[in-house]
Image (cartoon, rainbow, N blue to C red; front, side, top):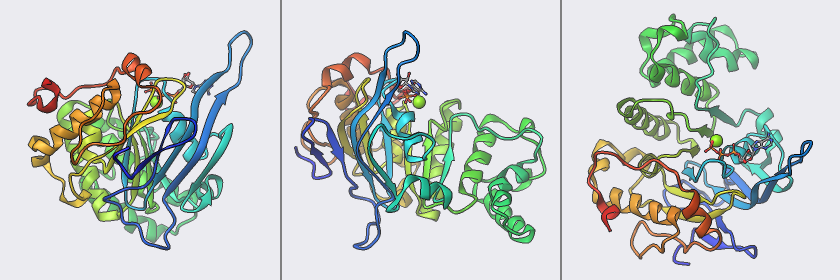
Length: 323
Ligand SMILES: Nc1ncnc2c1ncn2[C@@H]1O[C@H](COP(=O)(O)OP(=O)(O)OP(=O)(O)O)[C@@H](O)[C@H]1O
Ligand SMILES: [Mg+2]
């Protein structure tokens, strides 16, 4: 183990605890604490049961940006759904800001954005964004002000009265993010929110998300298949093995605070080093020492090699990839 942020557990998986870049104080509870969580989906008819997650432990500090990456079916969405209390673990515990996940859901401590924007087509952009506020009986005047602020935040000032089908995919996704931010959550749970976007829009959205995170100081748990996206956005990248999903490595990305990250970072040597480190972790090779290295993978490295079907950076210098 070279990384103090990752510790091996008895079961051989890697437990990821909150690391550098996050704004932890002595008294503030972690944004997310996942302790020894497993999720087994029961058998149906002749189908065998499926262990989607096996003994996963993960801490996310307030203000920290953590990405989950791993092959299809390794349990990333399942983990996010458990944190959001949309599903319950078979064993283990989850807390959000020190509360049970269910309490955090009731208290609207987090916002959610998934791959599909999921906007209501019959409501205007503004009405979509204000929906969570309406549901929580926030007064009309306050809602109007808040929606105006959010439209500015995501760069859609002039689009409040449009309908979703009058917007591009990227714009719709920004509306979904604005809606997720409506109640100023201290935590954002995002499942491949930019997966359906073209590369240019996707990079613009990444820049925008970083800006929003810097402004709101929200913690983020972000699922992606893209290694460069994970590195560009995150303080730490959590690498998962194929089913049963386990954390096999945690890569701290030493590229500065969310506020300091910008377009130039995409051409930075440290960025390519971190991309290489994440790729090596996914493929099960050892990661050499350096600012972007992490704990040695202990568990399912061979499985990771087998199942790693992740996006590679395109059209960019190879960095460590050429080795
Ligand atoms: N409700 C469910 N019932 C039964 N099995 C499920 C259910 N939800 C997920 N699974 C199974 O759990 C495993 C993990 O699924 P999950 O959707 O979390 O993967 P993922 O890592 O998000 O994959 P992808 O990258 O393709 O989105 C898969 O084998 C899936 O079939
Ligand atoms: Mg998924």
